[in-house]
Amino acid sequence: MSFPLSPHSRSAIVTRLRAAGCVFAENEAHLLISTARTPSDLTAMVDRRVAGLPLEHVLGWAEFCGLRIAVDPGVFVPRRRTEFLVHQAVAVRDRRAPVRPQVVVDLCCGSGAVGAALVAALERVELHAVDIDPAAVRCARRNIAAGGQVYGGDLYASLPGTLRGRVDLLVASAPYVPTEAIGLLPPEARIHEPRVALDGGEDGLDVVRRLAAAAPLWLAPDGHLLVETSERQAPRTVEAFTGNGLIPQVTGSDELDATVVIGTRPTSHPLRR
Picture (cartoon, one colour):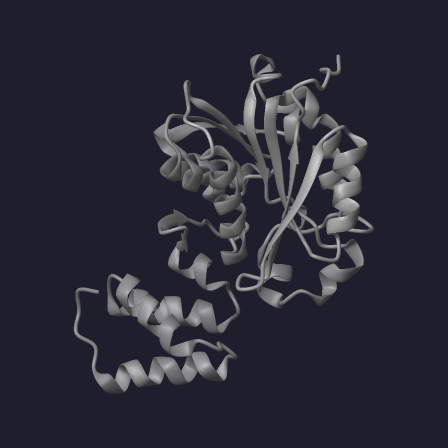
């Protein structure tokens, strides 16, 4: 912020945010005030937040794994719980010293937050990211910039064929909310985020099953598929992984309320043609 703001004005902003139902009104006020360029800009930002827009859409960015990720209006906001997905992906690759660039594919990439975080955390990464939503693709290209390639398309369909059998890490924060539960989501998500980034079908696992079915074709021997899911959905996610020849492992974080299922392609797994 490059303009003075009186304590009374700060307090008034906090009061407005709290009245609008913002649980962390003081923190949000600080972020809005520090991001605004002018008093009129600040007023407009507070008005948008009070009207129900996600804070990240108002600010134009979200903090994720220590990075500032650009988040455009209408693009899925990266969740803090998804940082656990990044941590697990880093853990499975850090067990070995890379002898070549590690090929990482971020499917359902949204803003590109997961891919950007993996580029920052791992050494020598060749990143490819995909999303079906054109707005997300544009946003991801801003966040990944020179760090990788971003494609628009449906899951694996837009990936270069040269990646088949070469991918070390397939990561996906795929939609996993059951269709009939969409109406129970907070208005910030239900109204302002794309349904395609939320709706996982009847039981929430339609996209996850598609991810698992094709993963062995793309993974390198001993490569890993990691997907974010819910604790309740983890057993069926494991079934999908096992049914496609992947060795599953379930990991979770109580602190972040996060569940990730990891599937490893055995070194002897035959590629599907």
